[in-house]
Length: 599
Ligand SMILES: [Zn+2]
Image (tube, rainbow, N blue to C red):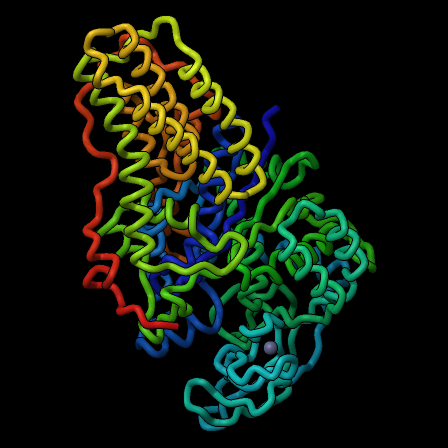
């Protein structure tokens, strides 16, 4: 049965290029998952985009002497280049600065407002005493009132993960110039999160299949809900569709309110582009549809509590009840798949300290699949994990090049040299059959891991088959069987069948290499489709054209099954699948990379 599967991928913030820590959290896991789901025949809609509003964009644009629009135009393009380069197979990767996104955000808000889940309230807001301008939350720093961490930000404590109000910070100060902010009264929209305590709690009780760290964290949050401001004093963002508010120059939705609505707005935009404007409903309104949200752990709050509460409010399913909003009854997330953090040689990635490896730099030197492999096998799936050049070089050379690359290369080379085509098997012996049985059985075991987002176990199991095939070749020694060509051909056929199976098992992880192996085995056409950029035209009122990432994944050939390799198909001399890296890279990293420091 073909199930609609929504892959909702966290929206990268358009204030700079992404580093490999970012894409290890949201990017590669979501793509591996989506590629697997397509291969088993499910209808996948994978959406995301650049998150382009909010105070950090405004402040950075001021600092660079440019406009927020110019800044996000520049960085959305850089980020799109990185994601295309990594081969992340978005059905639509768009932007929050589109008319469509603004309209969907306003419509969803209207449902919350009509159902009584938002009220206006005068609260204390910070201004800079020297300039009189609003001082954004993130630019206020102080001691966390909950855990005592001295570097807490006004909106969130990075140490304990709690959302904060800047007025609650102990010893608050401006991160821009160090002065003490002044708190003045300003009117805001408050979302009545406590009205969802019961409905969120009973929903979370049904989420028993989540990763335990995500579920336990979410339950703790849901036990202690407070009303949250969803507006900000800012002139860059989505306008508030209320009389007396819409035209105020300094009132916009809080960036996190509109960013999570992006999953819905991107689905709506995707449907419009297909010519069937209601097509998004298959993923959002069909009760049998599934939805998986991928992110780093710093975003759990917004996806396991805030976003479900917005959906419940739109559906009229909080304590106050209400009508179902204009989108129809919307599905809550099936699962929140959150990763932990990737560190670099023991330290947090930090743009300000220069300890950062940008995706673009990495791809230019090493290509996408080596990074995808590292993230899948050694990434921060269940606990923080560390990137070191030594480990990257070791895994690339010994696992990708020596084990997988070598298996492909020597089995195809031998068949090419001896037969020139896929050899014909005759009377297989128990060793052949045992190996084939293992690689066939791996579709179930690896598939079960992938369906549960257990990427590390999935790729380890796939690589175990590669190891078994290498051991089989070393033991059977087809290169010593000149006097028994029938046996030699049976061995080579068996090895090539296992290469075909292993390549299928590895396709979600290594889609670029998988295409090459498909061709090296004499296959033609697209095995694993890659995304591309498309011009999406002018975005109405906001007046600028935007481009999106998309792809035609229905045309790819990869299916999650052992497919027989066709006897007699001509082969050519293979080229190496993965280049080996100079081991000295493991000590220092490439010249463009920051110097690793201890701890
Ligand atoms: Zn704290």
